[in-house]
Length: 342
Ligand code: UFG
Image 1 (cartoon, rainbow, N blue to C red):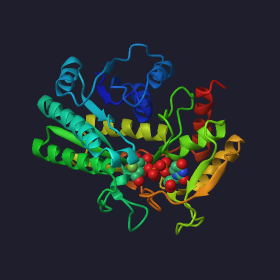
Image 2: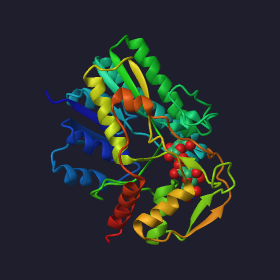
Image 3: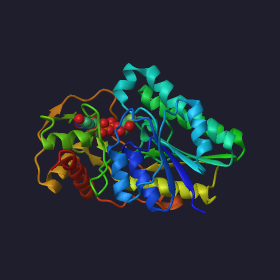
Image 4: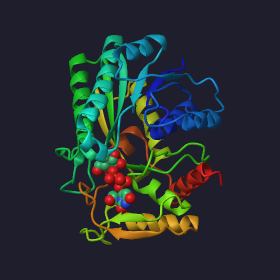
């Protein structure tokens, strides 16, 4: 029988890519979103890519416990992938309560509903932010977590703990997987879905594409005096389609009863570091465009260097990142041009 997956925050950047991959893998998907940080563009894109006009969309806020219980009653869901959360690091420093309230409450409501339903699977979208500035790179799942620098980061650490405690207390009735994403970038090759930042982008790639298209004057490269080969930060940039596929592997692992523990953790990255400067240069080369940039002071709170050791996800889940940085950056540019109507 076809299994059904609820994707909270399913109309956003990562959620929409995950919805596409789930549908293409044969799952039924229920998308739920409150559209607080996105519009209907990506949901419409998902329908076009999959050729499915009938994907259920529920406009709801996961902080509303009654609404969460209702969606669990209304649909025959077997698992939930929880994305619905605020994600701007800087904003979280200014509005910590807004972040704690939204990100923790929404997840606790999901877990409560999962617990009530029983025999349920929860996949949580965590982040490499939980490792802070690691003492050693690449990081494995055993690398110790560090105290979070921002309230946003802290919500990821806290949600990881909340899931682990809930799984433990449920004695096998609720199972969980935590995926720790490194730096998701790019867009679907169709250019019908991608990242839609509101206002000035915080993240590197949307800032690059907006500068290349002329929406922003100049990209600031935050720091070129780090102790790295070219002085700019090192990251593990993971293609969003590869990342989305990791969710399909994880959900299937849960639903097919292949988990080795009731709560598992996987790093989702390529395993290959790339510097900020290398990324800018690669973008220019593959797309044949100039990116106007300048070197700016370091950005407070930035990590110097972090990349994943994805061995566990590769060997245990059978998932591996396959898209090249060139494909990824070409897709990011195609999406920006699509948005500009070019
Ligand atoms: N960068 C620039 N200029 C920009 C934007 C970013 O030089 O305009 C640099 C940053 O300094 C950093 C790299 O590009 O070295 C990547 O920055 P992003 O903002 O794209 O990503 P981060 O690595 O800072 O953020 C990621 C996740 C967050 C998470 C954070 C924790 O996107 O969700 O790691 O460190 F919280």
